[in-house]
Length: 66
Image (tube, rainbow, N blue to C red; front, side, top):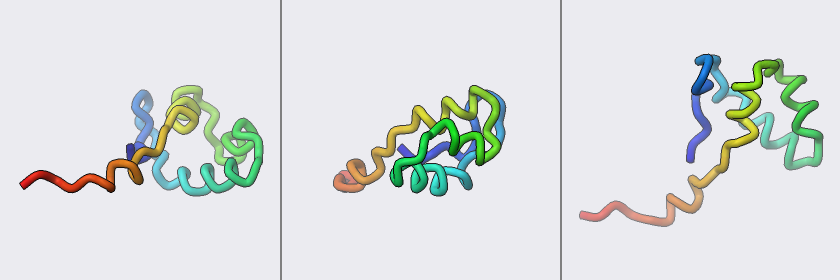
């Protein structure tokens, strides 16, 4: 739902890179090049960024039950 703050495997901080990554990919840049530019060279970190699906907008529609 929300971008992980750290890589699940190695623990590297990733949360601060998500906005730049998503903006550049939405503009049409190649995700491989963007990840290289951001310095993500470990496959576990790359997997975390590429495999993330943002569902926060869908979840925000629901209110908690009282």
